[in-house]
Length: 336
Figure 1: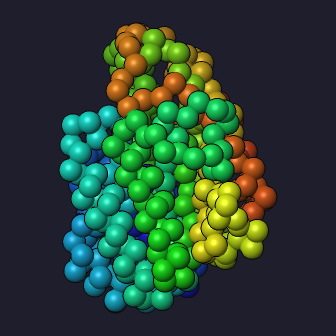
Figure 2: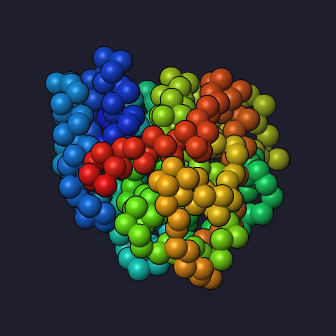
């Protein structure tokens, strides 16, 4: 088995590649190691993978480089593709919209074309809970329409789902999209709340708490998420025999196409989350209360019933245990 993992120098990509390597799978990673956040952290992740196994190779390619991506597919002879590379971040999309077009739209088209022309048996790709946008019915369900994104990042992820369906329909490419919900854990992203809040508490700096703390997030631990991704990769989708074009289900299709939420199914209030960090660190946070930021939503909450039914997957890590693991890693990695 040979698998292409895009975004292998990223947070989720690194963990997925680690698990695959541990199971004896040959992994080629694709990543441009851009400077959206600390490149040294990305290089450390790659070094960890290279140290783990000689069956890992990183192709340093930008997703928007069509000829470079095609060369990776041509030389790789992959069985499956797990596409986790993207320009991430809701707030950054307000400042640098073209980065999202290049990576998330042009780049995803290049991945789809590679899969189409090289006989990939299953493409699993990262969508996002951000696609739910202005939806307020909880928990978020993959069977609900998501036609009102509130950030360009969300719009590009919704576009990925539409593009994937088109390739499933036109070319019979089996595709599965995963809507990730606030993934955290060791080796996590510095632009996300678990990392930013931990760093601030340990250094005695204030935390920017948006919407005056009136927010809830479905924090999802990385080991749980990685297990879910690998189970999904083994479930090659087919057409839904009960799909009705009179009442179309957004989560499935007459084509080999599926969508799943992958989250903890247990939202945590932002102030409670900060309290967990305070308890583990043994320090009190300085809260800087601020209004809601453009593009943000008040709550995320994943309905994971479909994923459980398809794979038997359930998250098992509490926020207390997950954050304890993350903070231990953070202290060790940064000598904090």
